[in-house]
Structure formats: C-alpha cells, structure tokens
Amino acid sequence: MKSFAYARPTNESETVNLLGSKWGRTALLAGGTDLMSLMQNRVSTPEVLVDINHVESLKTLQPTDEGLVIGALTSLDDLLDGEVLEQFPAVNQAVDGIQSIQIRSRGTIGGELCQRPRCWYFRNGYGLLGRDGERSLPLEGDNRYHAILGNQGPALFVSPSRLAPALIALNAQVRIIGPDMEDVLPLEYFFVTPRNETQTENVLLPNQLLTHVLIPPADNYVNATYEVVQLQGLDWPLAAASASLKIENGIVQEAKIVLGHVAPTPWVSSDAAQSLIGQPVTEETAQSAGDISVATATPLSRNGYKVQMARTAVKRAILRAAGLLEGGQESHV
Image 1 (spheres, rainbow, N blue to C red):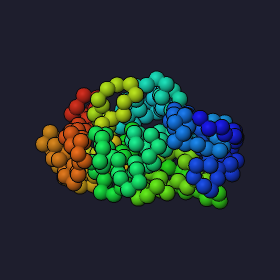
Image 2: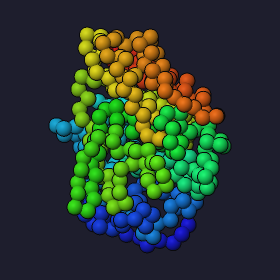
Image 3: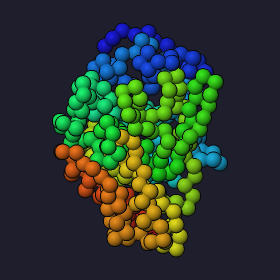
Image 4: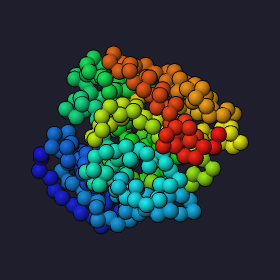
C-alpha cells in the first residue's frame, strides 16, 4: 500500500474543502470495506485519505413528512434495525441478502452506492474499461459476470450496488454537495456509463460528496427485490430485480422495474413496467414483463446464462411485491 496523508474533517464544508479537483489525489474513507482492498492492490493510490466518520450530519436516519432521510454514513445494519424500512421491503430484502457480518456492520449506504465495479480486469489494474492497449479484455476473455444489457460501448462491467435497484424503483433521491453547490437529484440519474477512462460510474466530480439518500413515502405502493445468488457470504448477485407497483382493485396502475448486476448502471426497464399497466399481477403477466425486460439483451461469449436469470429475477420481484411469492407483502391482487 502506498503511503498517504490522513485528514479527519468534522463537518461537510471541511470535507469538501479537503477534496481535490483531480481524480486520484484524495479518497474518502467511510466503512472502508471496498477502499482498503483497492489501496492494497494499488488500484487506488490517494495522496490524502479523508476520513468522514466524524461528520455527524452524515449519520442521519430520520423519517420525515417527505420520506426517510438516510445519511451516507448510516451502516447497513442500522437500516435493518427496528421498523425503519417497514414501507420499503425492497430495500430491506436487498440489505438482508448481504450475508457478510463484517460488510453489514461496517459498510455504509453511501459507500454501497459508490462502490467500484467488481470486474476482475479493473481490480487487477487494467482500468475501468478493462483494456490492454486496444484490446478489450472482457470482450475477448472471461466475461461470465459481465453486462448483458447496455454493453454496446466499451464499458462491460456491471454496477455492483445491491441497494441501487431497490432505491431507484422507489424513486429515491440523493443529495450531493461540492464547492459552492448543493443539488438533489433522482438516484436513477446518479449512475452513468463511462465512455473512456477519464470518466467514472457516477456523476460525482472529484470535489463532490454524496451526503444523503431520501426515499419518498411508499404509501399505496407495494415493492420487493429478488436476487439470484450463486453462493452466500461475500458473493454478489448474478442478476437481481426490484419492483414497485401501485395496485388498485387488483389492477396495476403504476409500475417501476429496475434490474441489477446486468448492466454498467442499474437498468430501468420502462417497457417491462408498462406491460403491467392495466393488468392484474399473475404468473403470466409477471413472466411477460420478465421476457420484455431482457428482449434487448446482447450477452457476451460466456454470460448468456444471465439472460434467463435476469428474466426470472424480474418475474419473481413482481410476484413478491404483489404478495404472490414467499417473502412478499400482503396480497393486493
């Protein structure tokens, strides 16, 4: 691990002032569950490590009239404590799927959303796009866990966040601050697909900070997450989906479907959601939505199996949200 300076700000303004305008010069330390491995492998080599664990405003976990406000330093374990996620089983199920005690206790919601891709080419020093000169290593090599959607450009990794699909399905927003700026934007627009190595996986600039997540009330909506996981413990899902549905008199009035671990960003399937509008939730309508969600998939040489897994995740997330699958809410159909 490369040597570095250490800074410990106590408020948001001080934190922003410590961040530089150039990528790589500083790194934020929250739970450290991802950063430490990146630094040990010299994928991240910051000159200054900014420890934000003493910024009390980032530890908020408070229900308000506008929804649930979650500070970026809130641990995943704290999210599962009590009834804080009672309205949001999709988020609860995503957090509960993380079986590692260490990650749940140390990992934070901000870190979970901002974690770097798990692509082994990136983790072994070949850059975010996994290139060796002009060669795309994921395209030519082992791509079992890479993208099947949104993979027409050079980015072939998958977004690693387990919470993002659920939060996006629930129309969550994030607060971002920087020098002389503060903005709140839908989480859906926080993630981006890089086109070259100078870009990253989200809209943050080097001197900006994600401070809070806001989940609006889920009144009159049912929601759920379904993950396909090969093993327990530290494994990330092979495919996942979250669904949020507004059902009245047995008929879907509104819907949002978001897939995870199948594209460089959490993948919003508007067509799959639209196919449910005006329909009851049944095995057939959920299956049809699953089929539609992967209709444009372009699997790589070794990850075609993920198409069926993604299709199934969408179907089961819908059924679980409607109370028609084990672990779902009370039936509304």
